[in-house]
Image (cartoon, rainbow, N blue to C red; front, side, top):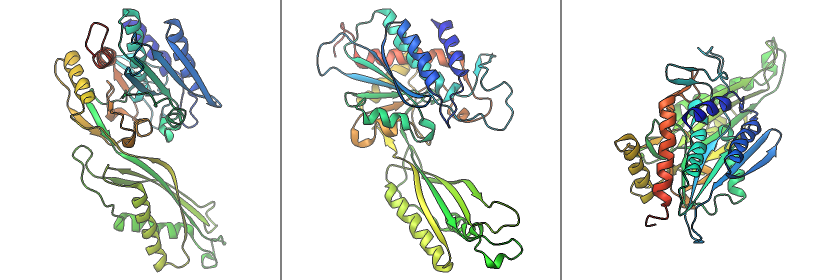
Length: 391
């Protein structure tokens, strides 16, 4: 099975499921073919051009209507490879010195394929689980978790008792992550000839005032989080102007705000709006609009939750020592699949290295990838139990 798993991961890494635009359908079809080959029930859910989610089941033997359901989450899209030249082409899936290089190897096709092969291995073994395993392979995680939102809206989390998300965690047991609030601010001005700038209204100059205020005066109310620390705000994109000799009449920026559980996103937005109003008081001609284009809450599972203990005990079995509990700054599909109000415990754990996510020369250690398959099998059996175990 080991060679098959590595070979299959390489096949999936070669699929350019870059988001935007996504192109996850070829990945979903390849997964479906593999699941069909091994007799695992699955459904392909297409929702847009070349976009799809995939749901698959490893059914347990229990007829108890209240039997546990463990969901396994992984996304099929990857971010662009970037402008920096890689040592190995990002979609060639080169294996060298115990590492498999490729965009998405750590984040997170390695984790997704690991989940699938854990299900296949348990199916082959004939283990008689007391509960059910449900795979949720999603599209569009990198751009607002659109696939996970569709899965949640269509009821695919309604029967789930616990969730494993195979994002890269360096094998650590991650039980919390920050929320993501992505905001676009647009300033509007008036064009004029570049040689007579006083006849126009320069949107870039107005945006400069807004950015300066954000850098100097934007403060968020929060309580520090033991695992997640403090919130952050990154000015990530700026666009403005059309030509050197034209006064720009439009400038836009995108902010990436990461929040902690003590915050409410509506409060953060009110603080931004108040800040812009303060700029306008000093610059009456300022015309600025604010738009939210990604709004995902932080998630957190209690460290003493029985499911967290099950996962940590499973790491001790596989790695000979229990892995530590951590938090992470990036978001996952868990923000949609297991928001706090739903009450579903979620743990993020994967063999990929989080510091390689979105970086050039991304890779996953082959041994870590294969160990993660054993870990996912162990978690499934320990959480769901078998016919010879007490539930």
